[in-house]
Structure formats: C-alpha cells, structure tokens
Length: 452
Image 1 (tube, helix red, strand yellow):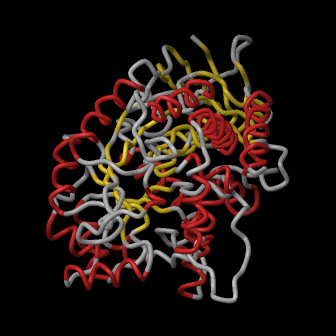
Image 2 (spheres, rainbow, N blue to C red):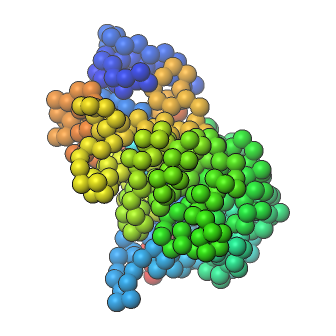
C-alpha cells in the first residue's frame, strides 16, 4: 500500500486540492480531498490521469527523422510508405523488441500510461511465418514488461494490397496472413500477453484496402466483444480508390456494411463528409486521431468540430511515433482546427471554458474506451495510472485548476512531466524512466546496425 499527497489533482469529478490517494494492488483504493499531509505520504504538487495512446506502430520509431528528403516528383504518404516497407524488411525480432522498449519508455516519459499497439509486422524478412507465430507479438509484450507500460495488443489482419482483394506486393510480405493462419496468430497473441500485468488484446483489420468484405466480417466475428480497430479514410487517394471499387466513400461503406458500434476505433477517419461524421458519431465508435503523424504525412485535417457537435468520441495516438507527447498530440489537434477554420479555442466546449481541459477530457474518455479500459481517470477502483507535472516549469508556475492543463498542453509539453505511475508502480521520476539508460543503449546498438 502506498499513499500519495497532491496539492492539486484532477479527479474524475474535477480539480481538487489537498488530495491523498491510497494505492493498493495497483489500483486507487481511496481518495481524500481537503486532507492534511502526513509523514507517510509521498508529496507532489500537481497530478493528472495518465493518458491512453490509442494507436502506435512501435517499429516505426526507428524511422523517425529518416524520411525528410524531397523529390522533384513530389513526396507524399505513398512514397513515405515505400521507405517504411524497406525499413520493416531489415528488422529482426531482437530489433523489434529493442525499438519497442525504447518507444514505450519514451511514451511513459511523455505522460502516456497505456499503448494500443496496432501490430502487423508478423513474419520473417522472407515473409515466412516464424515457428512461433506470435514471435514478434511476444517481443512487443517483452518490451511492455520491461518498461511497465500498459499494453493493449492489437494483432492486425492484412491480406491484400488494394481494394477488392488485389494481390499484396512483395514489400508487404511480412504482414500477410490468410484467415486460418490469422486465427491461430490471434490465439497465440492472447497467450503472449497472458502473464503481463493489466494487458488486454483487441483485434484489427489493417484497412479496407487490406481485407475483403468477407474477411473483414470474419475478423470482426473473431474479435467478439474485444476492441476492433481499423485504419480508414486517411488519404484522398484511398477515398477515390474506394469509390472506384464500391461506389461509396470508405466510412460510408463501412457504416453500411459492418456492425460499427462502441467496440470500434476508426483510426484517422480524416476524410469524411459531414454526414459520414454525424453517422460515425452516432454509432458510438471512437475516432482514433494521430494529429502529429497526420500532419507529418500530409494526410489532411480531421473535421473535429462537426464530429464533436454530433457527440463523437475521440482518442489520441502517436501512430508512426515521429514525435512523442500527450501535449503535442492535443495541441496539434486544436491547432489543426484553428488553421482549418481561422479561429481560436475551437475545441473548448463552453463559453469561457478551458480548451486544454476539453481536449484532455475527451482524449482520456475516448482513448480509454477504445483500449478496453473500464474506468478512466483518478477515481476509487480505477487503475493507479497517473502523472505529476513539475510546478516549477515556467509554463506552470502559479497555475491552478484548468490553467494547469492549458499551460501543459499549449506552453509546456513533455519536459513538464515529472513522475509517472502505471498500475501503482512509479516508472518515471524527474522526467526519466527507470530503465532509460538500458533501453537507450539497446536502441543505439540496434539503430547503428540497421543504418549501416
């Protein structure tokens, strides 16, 4: 049992002062507001809930900064994807584990306490399945175990290279499964995280490009009540190709042909009409937004205002992991709307309301739901996943209440994070993960070999 005392803490019901949390068995056993600090309390100034990261491709952290070269023919998502394929083909299971461990430590340092790992790098470099089908899934689980991050592993079905069952290309060979083998891999992935504290397993089809309608239906049935994730409508070309194939836009097609409900997280969903946005919002599905990656890849801007007005739920993820930060993703989400609509404080939900608080609350609730977390935030019975912020950071000095979140998101960022607990274990102190040096040493050695 541990007791933590905070001058201010963002509880499920709002900000409170002089808060003591009593932790037991990885959960918050009791909350006392207006308490008096005692000698046994570990004292901190400012506490907020840990944030779930709904969408990550861990191996792509190793590519960060390696695709910033222009071309006379133009550079876009599709040319970036070719570089990603080449990078993926070079990696061994040891490389995957080392890069994932470095990423997960960095995510914790940034204030993320759980990650949804959208995992499709399944086979060896020749495209042959490993003798252990879940070899790479076990490496992701090992990285989560080493760093302590909460893991929602999302094994991903990938069978085709384009709409309508087009053949996969040779560069996609590490991703490809038929339904029979994927069912075995899904079972093996569940076993891979079986001994990992607090881990859960979802299921995904990579995209409408990568699965036929019949395969998508089978994958959804395979998942049962588990979270179901899917890339969709990320690129204009993808929308155009879907229309040529089916006569409908991707989100509209999915809503017409699949049982989209609260189990689903539609990742990106960047290019929707107003009607698609409203229908998706009414379905109860979460839009899994990755604003930094979507900007980096030139995807486009999600129309968050239309979606929010219809009651849509959102979560945030780091996708290609080019830059990591809770504040970075939330800030980019708001700034994208400012650029689109040429106005300010657009995600604030009330007159005079805090934009930072609105962003944070929405991402916490939507992201927790998308990753299968029953109780989000700092509340009795919830997992003890929390973050403290440095009260001496220049963006936080003298702040209270929602001004803390506004300062953190719009003027502070990752270097304002002080300590992080996941399931009651303190993993980050003074902004540094407890395994930082070990993870960094392995990552450096891995990258030196991969880039030689």
